[in-house]
Length: 393
Image (cartoon, rainbow, N blue to C red; front, side, top):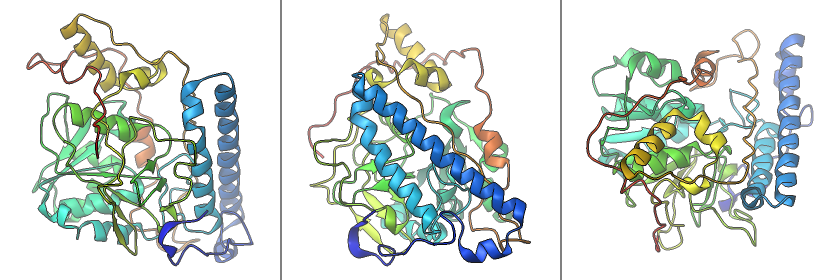
């Protein structure tokens, strides 16, 4: 795995005692904890390999989506394995099938808070993943409005925290999934608040083009597409990601002969624990103009209530049926969660770590069975039909 910029982590040697646990941890971890973490890592890697085989089979059978995205799983595998093998990963581990938390994520969050774009922003949307918890805390500390997507968009759209609604001592809790559920205001598709900055998590990102690979579930793209077509953001809204230096990759992202898909969201700014990279607007890939329904499968729509609501309203307004992707989509497995380190075996918990079970309970909350009609109001169907990609960056 080669990263851009020749950072200090580029030449890091893998730990030899274990692919996932460094020697000092092995010495202080109890037998049960050590065995459980090794088993979780092994299970995650085996699950990833099995899913990659499934994707390759679909591609060989002529599935166009699989043919266009199989290479992304090669990138994810390299990054996730590299973070674990070199002990650069942080809780929750193993990092496979998730936006990977990394050591130094708190430092990256502080760097984001110093960006001119952040200082000028009044409303900031931040993804709900653990490595961006420090960014969510900084938004609250700066007295800005914080928007966070509800986990996997299964139960709703965004949750919003307004300045002054959360006391200082609760900022850290408010920035977790459980805290957002308890303290934030759930928003609906009727919301039209202007978002001044979008922060997304990434597995890998290209500093020349802004090309980004996530964890493979497409939520960042869906969230961006919905916001774009509702008029909450536009082409000029900065998209920021914070990652470890080793996740900044210039080569084979995408590989020769492959391209990013039209719904993929490129980034404008990359922040690591050690540096800030501004992607050249002339070489940055174009941003999607909205939701590309023809790329969404029935399986994906069935999982996400807000999309079902949106699709139903558009069809009522237009009197026509939205055509979805015809081919099967192989949805990736959920991440495996190992035990959180405790003070007896690992020392202090990693900065930004979520309390055990809090995020998992929110993520696994069941979507409501019945559809809820959206309130009547201004028609949005003209903006929510099939958007066209901008011709220039």
